[in-house]
Length: 263
Image 1 (cartoon, rainbow, N blue to C red):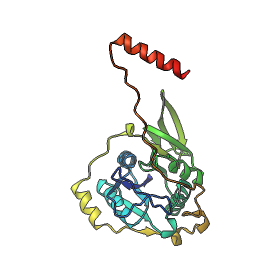
Image 2 (image 1 turned 90 degrees about the horizontal axis):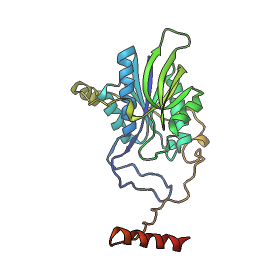
Image 3 (image 1 turned 45 degrees about the vertical axis):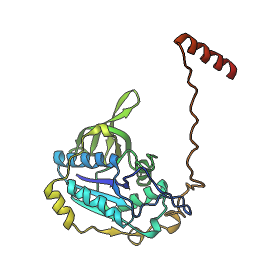
């Protein structure tokens, strides 16, 4: 199997800074980590490789510092990585980002499965995975909690999985190639090995820009992003509620009178 994992480097801080001119996140100079949900995607790809053989390729889009996420992926056991980096990609929303990733996946070619984390911790939209599937016209399943099996000896190949719902789960069959997004219930990510860390230090990371992907410039970056952020602001702090003191019966009576005044 050839498994592609789309990962994202996100700020390792709650003090996120916004560029006031573009209304986009400032990522340069901030400590970053692999998006936590993407760690489960990497782990599941590695487990599938251990079960069925093949290779795992990690892809990320971001500034030069995003190579740190790719090196960490290699230290965990990923076979190879691809970095998508171009100033023309800057400011891409989820639509443009998913298009760029989809074109990179097309360029890799001959893949069986694409795995993404369910969402990124900095954006929380859960749109990029489904967006990639839409651009590639792939069968997709979101919020996958378990992969039961993969039938590689059938035509077409079949993936059997469990998709998490609010009150249970549903059992699905997808034809491969397909795309899935995974939740944290699917596994427990491993730690990097010493051998993996040594490989990560030495690996040469290929970088693809728009010259390699050949996407029209009006479809990427801020120009190609239909989502426009008009204003970014901190919501006003909520005022504290009232506290009724005294015995229980007295407090209930005060609360009752307060509610009557609101009606």
